[in-house]
Image (cartoon, rainbow, N blue to C red; front, side):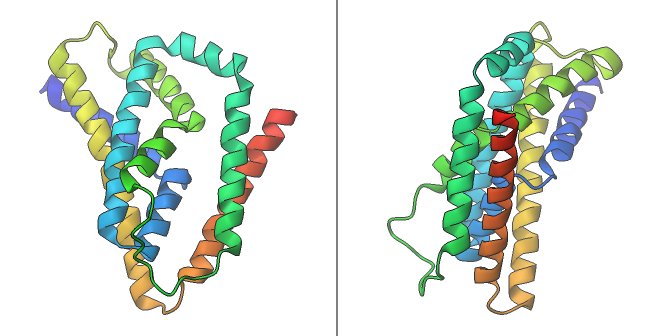
Length: 205
């Protein structure tokens, strides 16, 4: 019963952190609309692995990670600049006649890249791990192996389920409204530009 509780908590806290619209969610929506749900789920599966890596890292060395982020602000600058540029490309990109592209980037790599280079998610896990240890349950590197495995299984499924939901919702919108890909691309691009701009402002201020 205790093991099941660790799975449920891992699943729930991951869902809470994954629901807010972020770069991975936006990428899943964009890929669903411009390619298909199959490719979007490749991003989701890889992002689930990235979520495990971040949560494991937070579990293993929360204090060290916090100091590393504070001492290496250039990392946030690079990520913010990348988001700003990608958002601008999406916003001004013209709709292609064909959505299937043989030279499309690997969706697995996209999901892994966006999932790992996501400081807000790492900060979220640093907070969650600390909160769980103080108020809910003890989870650390000294916990038993079954507990750690089950907890991270909940983390992985939580991330994938949320991204799957985003993909399904995107399909419903696409099926009900015709010729929305261009509009949604611009909307997604604008969101990325805003996110990148906010992070750049935080970096300089």
